[in-house]
Length: 147
Image 1 (tube, rainbow, N blue to C red):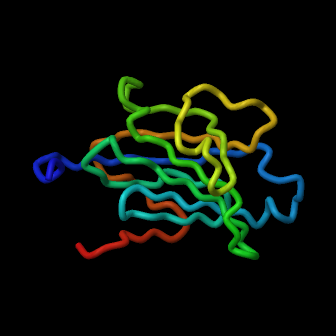
Image 2 (cartoon, rainbow, N blue to C red):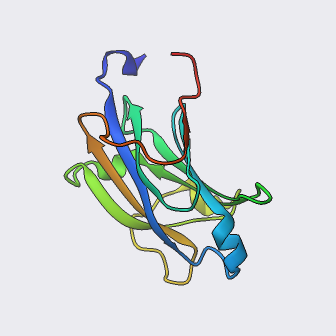
Image 3 (cartoon, rainbow, N blue to C red):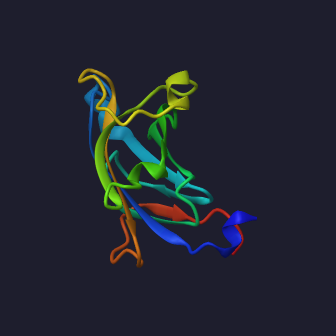
């Protein structure tokens, strides 16, 4: 396996804000985000998520973002973001990312350009850091496997 000899690195993901996720203020109040890299998963209590750390051996993995309605547990939006977008960006990037309904084929590819202003989107920050994050975010995190 390629990753066996590779040094683990830490990726810190933050959802800083959002636009156009719903016309309903009730739905907006009940949306929450789940972030996943490999077996590590984190669920926030709202759309925003601050400084969520993930360990990975490769920037060829993806950050899977899921937005759910907390009342019905319905998946409203998904997005897979390749971690390698931070390569050559001084190991950090912040960008607006379009969000798509589950099963939408547009999620199969990734374009760094800003989405149209009227589409559902989140403001995403990704950093590759050397040490552990200094503060744990509010929410629930699971490693999702045996250690």
